[in-house]
Length: 377
Image (cartoon, rainbow, N blue to C red; front, side, top):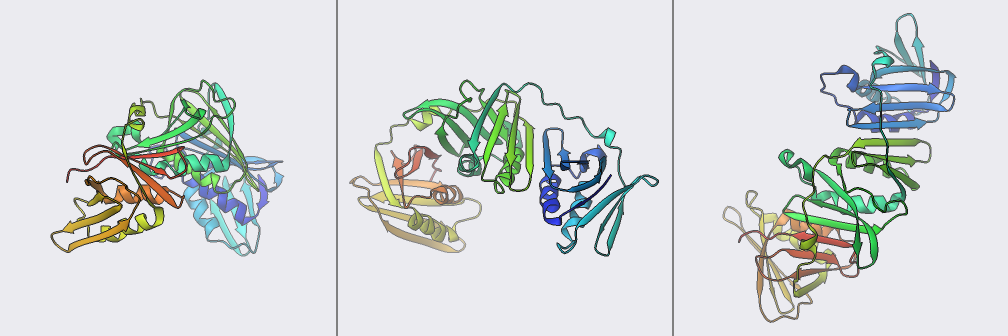
C-alpha cells in the first residue's frame, strides 16, 4: 500500500469515521478504521456493529492495499498536520506498520489485521427512494430536538419515519417525542416510498447522517427494510454510504394528539415570543423549570418565580380575540426549543384550557406541528 492524499479530504473523512467507532469496546478492532487503497481513491470504513460508514475520497494511489489502524490516533495525527504538504502513507511489509509522513513529520503506526475487520452484511433492502439533501435536513432539523434521552425508553431515542395520508395527499412524515413534547414534520411522499415499513432511526444514526448532509447539496438515495436503513450521499469531493440497524420497537400512537379540537388560536411574532421566553426564563428555578403563560384578550403575559432569586414578567401584544383568560404552565426549555424551531415571522398556538396539550405551528405551514404538554402549576 502506497498513496498520497490531501489533508483536507482526509481529515474530513476521518472526522466522520472516528465518531462512528467506539473508543471503549471489548473488541479492539471496533476502535479501528479500515483503509483500502484502490485505483479510484481511498476507502475508509468504520463500524460499531450497529452503524457502518463507508466513505471514498480522492487519493493518488501508487500501490493498492488494505490496513487497519486506530481511528482516534490517526484522526489526531492528521488534525495536527498542516495543509502545506500532502500526506503520504506507506505500509512497511517488514514491520507491519504504516508509515505516515507530511513535510518533516513522520509517524509509524501499528496495524491490526484487515482480515479481522467485521464483514458488513446488509441483507435485502426492500424500498428505495431519493430525497434532496435539503429536504432530509428539513425533516431532521425540525424534529430531532424532541427525541428522548432516556435509555429505558429506547423506542423513543430516534425519529419515526413513515408514510401517511394527510390533507395534502400521501406524505413522508418524521416524528419524534419524549412524551413531554412532540414534533411532526412532513414532506410529499417520494416515489418508491409507498408501502415502506414504519421505522425508527436511532439517535446516533441521526447525528451522523446530519453531519454528512452538511457537506452535500445533492440527492440522497435511501434504501430500507424493516430492520435496516442505508443512506448514499455524494459530496463535492467524496462519496459516503451510511448504513444502520433500525430501532426494534413500536413508536407510540400519536395521531389522535394532532387532531385535538383546540378552539382558541394565539398568533404572535416568533422572534419576539422566543426572546421573551428566554428573558423571563433567566430566573426560572433549575429544578422546576416552570414558566407561566397567561392569555387574555389580545395579551399574553409570561411570568416566572424563583424563591431564591426573585421573579420576572413580560407582556406581549398578540392576536388572541377571546375574553376568557387561560393560564398555562410549561417547562421553559421545551417552550423555548419549539419557538426557536419555527422560521416564519409569526407562529400560532392552538389552546383549549390550562390542562390540555397545546399545538404550535408556523402561521402559514401545516406541514410542521409541535405538541407541548403543560406542567401542573
